[in-house]
Image (cartoon, rainbow, N blue to C red):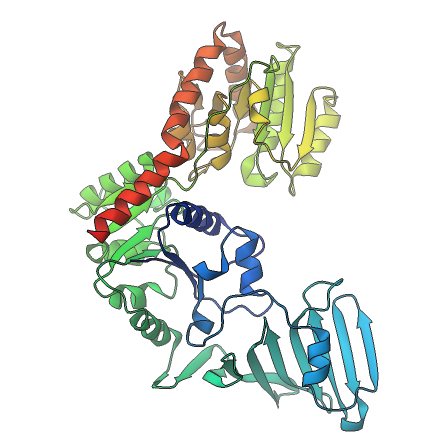
Length: 500
């Protein structure tokens, strides 16, 4: 029994989808459930093992579509410059090195190669470009072996990629990808596949899925149809990672699904279950299917994050406020800063610490300086906040869209009341209006003056409460539903249901 999780790509700055997968991998690994995470995009600039290790995956959990049909393992780079010197025939007449780039010149053959190192201070080779008589002819890509090679020919005075070869550990060719611009033909030992869609279908068939397996589709762009058609007897689940419809296009008769989920929703009869990260989104999705489709699919709410325990403190700083997020435009930390400045006139002991970094940092610094707020508003940068939240009395968020909101969960896990917009779905999940914080009206128009005034008023109301500890306890109560063992149980219940 295996849980197969299908995604497209991954990068150094991964999205919430990849972090949700990494969290899922951790839970399933802890409970000894066999899980594989499949990536279907092509990676040329980085090694997949580096990218997946970076956010907590283990190598044996990863399947890369492009090496699945070889006997290669997912592994980091160990191929060295010394090995390259030995493997390339000819007399090296000159070497040059600058940063991560190393060049070997073979002047007798009118040939040179350029090696790109994994890191500047290491001799580990990620890829090598071969240039003969001034023209690029080949690129080799390495892990612990030559993983694949690209072949080029001159066209319109440019190097034109026409072929990739993927290798087995013994150096034999496992298969070839013939390339013409954006189109590829995959030449397998037993088949010629004229598109990536056909190739993914071929891949799905070779997984040899059984009725005890689960296929979870995290991203479906370019893969959904092939997965749906070739899942065999396995159970199929679809994870909803974002807002699933366009609120601005909603009418009494019609709904416009998010393009990323439209295919899955239209073919919901083929889906065994959908997964949302919050109970509120589950309710909304079920209501919309009932109204617009006339049939409600099975929807599970399984959070994409959890806390191992709640954290208590007897030393909270009085009148202290915290926020933690990327300092990005959509987080509107500038509004929060101005609201605290306004509230300070009525609450002279007020302090505000801002954790995080990003492009809006300069703007926020300017606001702080303009209002002379340096003594009570501090930019703290990016830090591990595990043992920090519980030192404060109140958490602020001004995001208008938070599908889950891990920082919100961490905040209530430290007993912090929250103030934020009545926005789907994180705020609606973690803020119980009047009990552990305040939900402010969702702004249809971004009237900054009005929004700042609303936050200022909510801050003043909160600190006017004589028994703020009751709101802290209410946050702990909400957080108790998101303890790690509770989320593990939800995944185990799903896995055991399929295994029966």
